[in-house]
Amino acid sequence: MEPKFWRERWARNQIGFHLPQVNAYLQRHWPLLAVAEGSKVLVPLCGKSLDLMWLASQGLRVLGVELSEQAVEAFFSEQNLTPRISERGVFKVYQAGLIEIWCGDFFALGAEPLADCTALYDRAALIALPPLMRVQYAEHLNTLLRPGCQGLLITLDYEQMQKAGPPFAVTDEEVHKLLGERWALEVLQEQDILGESWKFVQDGVTRLEERAYRLTRV
Ligand SMILES: C[S@@+](CC[C@H](N)C(=O)[O-])C[C@H]1O[C@@H](n2cnc3c(N)ncnc32)[C@H](O)[C@@H]1O
Image (cartoon, rainbow, N blue to C red; front, side):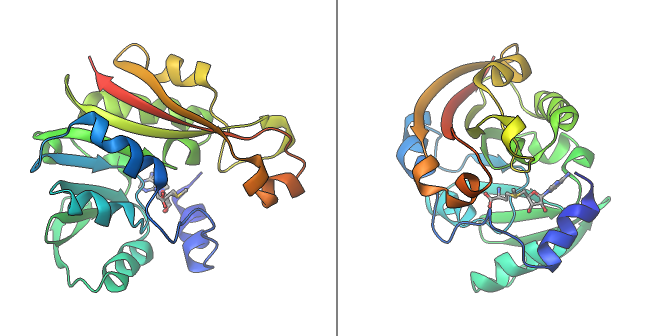
């Protein structure tokens, strides 16, 4: 998916992925990770997710990365926050309280702002990317994040033949292939969500599972 694709999705308000509430897996499973208050958490491809607010409410410093300036501006205005804006290389950085969003291409993000990052939260980031980009994404995470880093990853799995992404199907086997060498993986929850996903049913999808993984960088 090229930057243009996502900017157009935002421009046309085609943002069905955006949830009007905090993600339930995040609230249920994040405490298991025991990420200390004051830690920095990376949220790649963050959109204008309310999850950023929830992570900050846990006393975490949040570093989101998002391509679309429209999404970033919507986040701060909808949360009634007035960000300070600065330039950091090719990124425009918006910061208010514990939350900063780096507006630009995640693949251009260097390790420097993440030197003290010990946590990762991925909801609808890996599954937003087509297969080759998922490989690049996993490799980039590996270069950015250090041993000991804790993460929560949420994936979606269905028969890719039945529907085109995004969101893309990412099997458990693929998660292991992409991340298994550098991260210890544990499935925390697996849920059949076909019944509540009428758009997938309409498109002919017959199996739809969400999985939440705990990741520990080794
Ligand atoms: C499926 S949405 C998920 C957003 C968010 N994680 C959520 O749960 O609502 C994917 C987001 O990633 C952004 N995006 C796509 N490619 C990106 C890239 N290379 N760098 C930064 N953001 C990107 C898109 O603009 C979009 O907002």
